[in-house]
Every structure is written in structure tokens, then in C-alpha cells.
Image 1 (cartoon, rainbow, N blue to C red):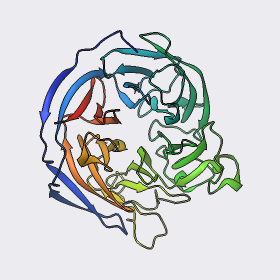
Image 2 (image 1 turned 45 degrees about the horizontal axis):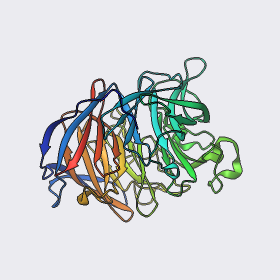
Image 3 (image 1 turned 30 degrees about the horizontal axis):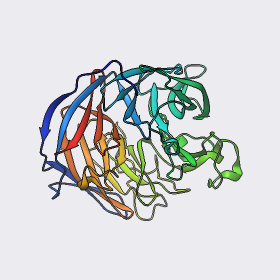
Image 4 (image 1 turned 90 degrees about the vertical axis):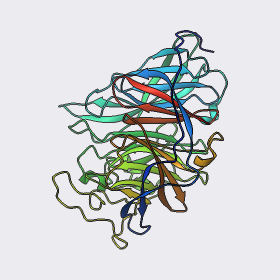
Length: 393
């Protein structure tokens, strides 16, 4: 196990939060929101411990079967921390990234089927922003082998790009590039943002504004709804998305995603095959310049959000909790809030959802991970961001 570069661990707060919150109640047909102040009985109480700091962390994941947490930093670095010992180390073998704006090194994913109590030699997936010709960029996903044969460092061997967002376009926003492995371990789902170009999200000849479903080697998966059209279109599972920054699976094996709206209209969606979620034709928000966008309606022909937020929560990440440490969170979606600077708790009820608690923090929150013991790990956003462990009390 990793032993060097041990960090001191410091308890910074003990919080008993009866969830002072802003709860959003959504109409199941339209996704419209109304804001009410409420307190949900049984809100979680936790102690918060500062464990480490990172520079612009973007995503994190535990290597299955281990207490070792891997954290991506947007500038292009990847680090790990053994959460039992506090030991840390770097990972080499990383790609060159198009760092700037919302771009850089993005998400990280491991295969649950490769769970082991040793780190050495397991598959790793990474996403990042890649530069193209003529000042263009796009998200890519690579697959390699993580090798940790020494105590204080790991290396990624054979990292190769298996998917590219198409087309590459100008700008440095809305890459999305979140990754999720299906519960059966057979498929890789990738969130592909609209790259702030909007209309491509309604054009299935490209992958902007979509969720793609691939085999683990990056080829289009059998059963995709537009498979007969070939090329990039064959990758698409759903479309009409804006900027997805969180994806996870519930206990029923259903995929959920949370995405940024424009000025208002952040959305939590139940992801379904061949569904069109409406962006930019429909949104419960409006354009930043104040121009209106038609709200979702029961008869508009688009999939409706299970929940939407105005004002926004600005989600940075999402997980659906299935651990044993926090009974109150079992089956709940937890979201890291950027501008809302809160951990947002959402109850999933069939095909609908409602916000039940909002736990305030003093910084923007970027990433979440559930530890092997059920503790919740939270990474703040930006430079000098703290890695926090939330433990039940």
C-alpha cells in the first residue's frame, strides 16, 4: 500500500445540520419550480474533516476495492491519496490538455469489475479537453492501464484516445465530459456538452449536447437508438442536453444526470434511450441577455426534467448515495453546488424528484465521491481547494 508523503489530517468542524435549506418543488409534467423554505425531518448530521488541498480539482474516484482516492486537477495533473494513511503521490503518463476556461483534465473512472485490494494494473478512463486546428477544441476520452508498482507514485501506461467529441469548435466552455460505467460493467456513458453552441444539441449528426453510450473499447454499443445511421450518430443515447456535470445510477439501474441551465433552469433528468431533453428549444430558464426561452410544457414533445431550479444551484457533480454510514441519504441524489455553495440533497420518487435538504458550505463545491466505508468526500472548487471528509456523528 502507498506509504510516503503522509499528510496531517485536521478536523475543521463538527456540524449538526437540521438542514437550513431552500427546497425546490417540481411539477412532474413541466419541471416548473417553486421555491419554499423547508426542513426535512431526518436530515443528516456529520463531522467535517479537512484531509488535503488540491489546485483546481475537477473530479475524483476511489479505485474499487481500495481506500485510495484519485483526484484530477484541471491544469493536467492527477494525484492520489490513501485515505487510511494520508499518504499521497503523483500519477504520470498523462496527456497534454487544452487548459483554460472550463477546459483541462476532466473526469476519471474505473471498472467496478476490477475491484481489488491492490492498486497495481487496472483499467483507467480519463476525459480531457483537446486542442484542434484553427483555435478549436473538443472533449476526448482515453483508456489506459494504471500501474502502481512503487510506494509513492503511479503511471498510466498505454493511454489511448477511444472517443472524440465532434465536431471540434471554438470556445472553452460546456465540454461536460462526465463519465459513468453502467451497473452491469458493459458500457461507458459519456456526457458531451453543447460547447455553448446551442443548436447542435438538436442535430443528431454530431455529438454536441448528447449522452453517448459506448462499449468499453469506445465503439458504439449495440442497441443505441440511431445505430443504423452509422458514424458519430450511432454513438448517441439521448440528446437535447446543455452542460451535464453529474451522472449516476440509482438502485433500479436507471441513469440520472444533472445539468446547468442558462439563467435559471438547472435540471435533474432521468436519462432514457432516444429521449430529447429539449435544449435549446425548451428550458425553464432564459438566455443570459434576458431573451426568453419557452418553458417545458406537457405537450411540447420533449422529455421533461424531474426537477429544475430557478435560481440555479450550479451543480458541479452528483452521486446517488448507496452507502451505510448515512441512513438518511440512502438512495438520495447528492449534488455539489458551485454558486449555491451547498451540498444539495434530492429525494428520487419514481420518475420525479424533490429537493429535501441543502447543507451550506463556505466555498464552491466541485466534486463528490463515496468512500468504501460510506463517508462522503467533497472537493471544493478552485485553487487551494480543500478535500473534505464528511463522517456521520
